[in-house]
Amino acid sequence: MAKVAERLGPDEVHVWLLPLMERGREPLRQILAAYLHRPPSEVRLIAGPHGRPALAGTLAGAIDFNWSHSAGHALVALARGIAPGIDLECDRPLRALALARRYFTADEAAWLARQPEARQTAAFLDLWTAKEAVLKALGRGLGFGLDRLTITCEATGPRLRRLEGDDPDAWQLHALQLGEGLHATLAWRGGPRRIRGLRPGDRGAAEASFPDTGHA
View (cartoon, helix red, strand yellow):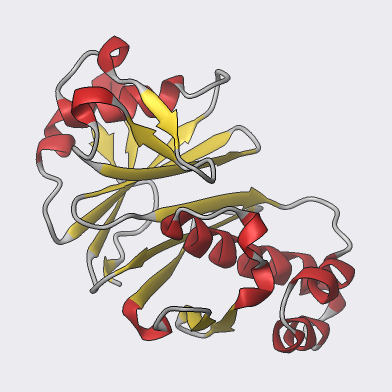
């Protein structure tokens, strides 16, 4: 892990897929410690105004990161010079269309209604993770309002079409292919970057856990 951490370039985003076998933020702390070349005990985290975790003390601002966890898995996104947002959700029973009509824009709800019924839950989670990834990159919570941004799911992936008070064309969104039953989106404000998908391997090595995406 440490060798990969040393190679986080200014044109990259590293995304780690981790098995979440313990509660709390210890898995996140261990990843950050490897990138910061510090023992995990020295990595202190604080919550921003809307709950986004950040480094505290002398390490504040040393690296930008975000994380999400669901169904025994965690994703950690790390970058320099941008604030990544990442969200992970697992398949589960949902009243997808009713939720979309309540919280999403009218166009998004109409798009979801046109999807085959068997695919509506997965399509809803694709939209949800994209929206939440943007909000997390902004440092805002769900209280900002899911209807204040519009996202379309296209053949090339999710695309931000509208964001109140911002230029949607300034944003990068990327759906991460993690496997059956998992939905995840990575977002940031800024130019394209190379995304590296990683996971802890045997004896601390790092190996790709989902395909290298190239430049998003």
